[in-house]
Image 1 (cartoon, rainbow, N blue to C red):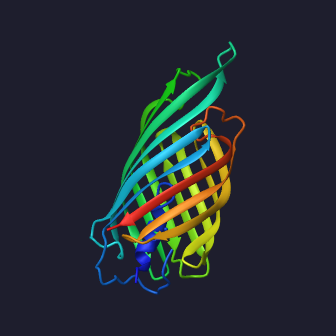
Image 2 (cartoon, rainbow, N blue to C red):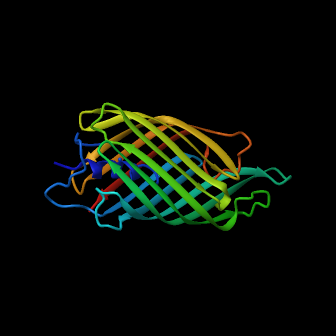
Image 3 (cartoon, rainbow, N blue to C red):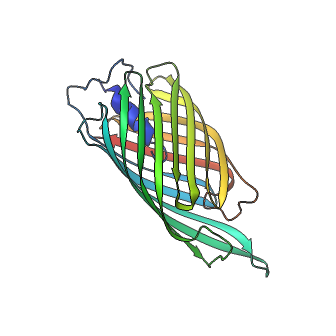
Length: 253
């Protein structure tokens, strides 16, 4: 039987940046033994923006099913575009960004849920073509970053997943709340998100489905809905108002 702890951990990372499962009341290992590492990757699109990410989480004690210190690394690539006016008519700006964080944290495992907290450093590098002197989100910046994630075991009738992060690099934040229910082997539900930085703020409302993948405790997470971008956030690396969608997959070993 696949263990609940792997499903909870994988749901937490199979969406963005950073869950399913067989009902159970403990985090005992299966006969195959404990797993220590989660790897994950995925993509996200909104109107005028696309992002791809990949990363890994490592349990220092070698066992994802126990309380302990965790190491996390995440890389993100973003492409976006927007229109601006330098006084001679509208001009299209193409932007791209590379983001990387390295963090240390601690997870608390309980029979019905998991809580993880992380702190570390983040680097963001933004490049605009042509250059936009009126956009503050340009160039390179280092920052301190904190992340928290909470996940209930999906053997319960109500699934809850919460993730929030904040970085001092361009005052970047990303939050997501999910509520769902098991339907057979899947989890179906609704999600709400808020994200932004010094250059934009946006909110999302949509739905998601988490699908077990039959290898290495894998999880595929799909989501989609509508994004609202603030009207004064035209120079946005987060995209414009319109439909959004995303997919993420993760495995442990």
